[in-house]
Length: 218
Image (tube, rainbow, N blue to C red; front, side, top):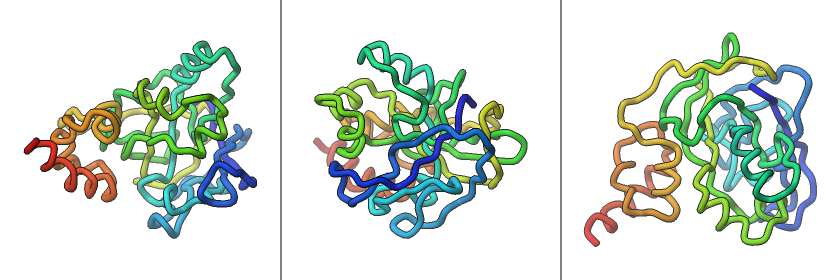
């Protein structure tokens, strides 16, 4: 783990809520991570981390958001600007972990106690685009298909910079974060692969159930 990042609520015009916690900053101490509760009611799984737009963010299936430092570095080179850890709104900036090809539903043991499970890929929104300030950002981010992943909390525990992340269980269905992202955004022909994937959130499963039969019959 390269860094653990939390954000405090700030006023922001590019969001459906009046405030956002997207501006995450690394902290120099361990942070307790727990399952926050249902979406629309609960926010982040990290103590002290603000989630303001609970209609679209937070809750058990989006308790933690992780993004790889390697992917940030690729974007940094392409955009010609420094992208500090946390600037994509991620709680965990990882290093040496291929998040894009993580399998939906796989479990990570983090440090001594914490266990997390890969759930849905992050879908970019106007808050993200407005905060980053890059023209056409949602389209560019979507085309790259390296979205990072949301995680649910299986076993609560502290997390800190330098903690090891180990994959301790991986389903054999082979649906990766990238495949799930492509299916839910620009490549609906892949939706059939998401049917029956238990690691997805209930919200994503409902979307798949609505859309997959249409795509399969088309």
